[in-house]
Length: 464
Image 1 (cartoon, rainbow, N blue to C red):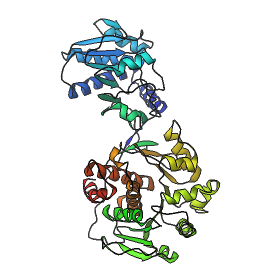
Image 2: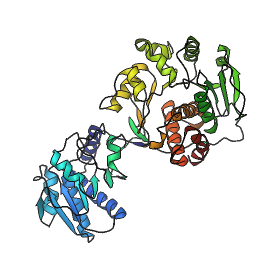
Image 3: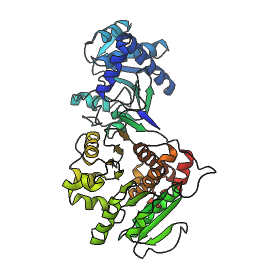
Image 4: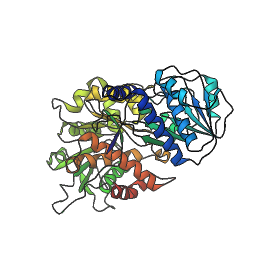
C-alpha cells in the first residue's frame, strides 16, 4: 500500500549499513550510475547528451552514467563544475575516458543533472538559470537546488523531464513544490535496506478486500454524517461514504430533505443517534456553522469511542480553544481515533503557519493533539501521533473547487469504518481514502465538480 520514503539522513544511514555489510562506496556508486543509465536508455532514444557533474558523490554518479551511455553508443559530453572532492567520485572520474568541459557549457537538447544530490544546497542563481534554460533535464537522484527533506525549491523553476531516484524515494519526490519539479520519477533500486514500516511513505494503490458471503451492511461499515446549516456539504460527504463502499450511511440533522439517493438513511438529530454500537465512524464538519446547536453536536461526536472525522466547520470550532485541543479530542481515552482534515488556512488557525517544512509541521500537530492530522493540498500529508507519516499522490488541480474536501471526509469515514476488514490501521485507512479521492479525480477529468467525484469513486474502488 505504500512506498518507503527516506530523508537525506536516513538515506545516508541506509548507505552506511551497506558499507558496514561489506559493499564498498565505489561499488555502490557503480551500481547507482549503471541503474540510472539503464533508466535513461529505457525512456529516451539515443541522442547527444551533456552530463553535468558536481564535485560530490552525485557528480561521481554522473561520471558512471556518462560512461554507460557512451558504451551504448550515445554521443556523450561531460562538463564539471569542479574537480571531484570524494574518493569514489575521483575513482569514477578516472574511469571516464573522454574530455571534461568546464561549466557552464553549451547545452544540447538533453542534459543529465548530476551536480548536487541529497541535501539542502541552494544553487548559484546563474547556474539555476542555466539549468532552467535546458530543453530537457534528467536529474540524478533529485534536481539540483531543491531541498531533499522539504521539497522547497531553491531557485529552480523548470521541471525535469525525468528524475531517477536512487535507492529510495525521498520527500523531494513526493512533496510540492519539489515533486512537481522532479517530473516523472523512476525509482532505481540499489540494494538499500528499506522497511515496509518506514516512518515516511508515499501512498500507493491500496489493497481493498471485497465483501464476501459473510458480509452485511454493518460489517461493511456504518458511517454517520452529522449535518449542519449547509446541508449540501453533508450530503456530499454522506454520498461519498456510500460510493466508496460503506454498507450503511446515515445523515442526521434538522429537516433533512428526502430524495435521491434513496439508500441514504435520513434522521432528525438527537444525541441518541450516536449511541448505536454498530457505528464504525462519524463524520462531522462539512456544512457545520458556529451556532450553539452545532457546538452541542460536535461535543456529542467527540464523546463517542469510535473514529471521528473532523472537517471544515468542526475545525473552525476547535480552533476557538486551541489550548484545550488535545483534551477535547480524546479526553481520558488515549485510544480514540480522531482525524483532523485541515487545508492550509484551517491548519494555520489550529496550529500556526505551515512554514517551509510541511512534513515537520504536520507531524508536530499530530504529536501535539494525539490525533491523525491530514493537511490537504497539492500533495496531501498525513501524520500519526507516533511520527509515522504518509504523502499522497500529486492531486489533480481540478480538485480546487468547492465540496471536494467534503467528499474526501466521507471517504475517510468509510475507510476508517472498514479498517479492520481491510487489515488497515487508522493511518493506512486514511491513506487509502486519500488515494481513492485522488484516483476519482483523475477518472472524473477536467472541469470536475465535487458531485462528479461521487460517480467516479465507484470506479476508483474497483481499481484498488
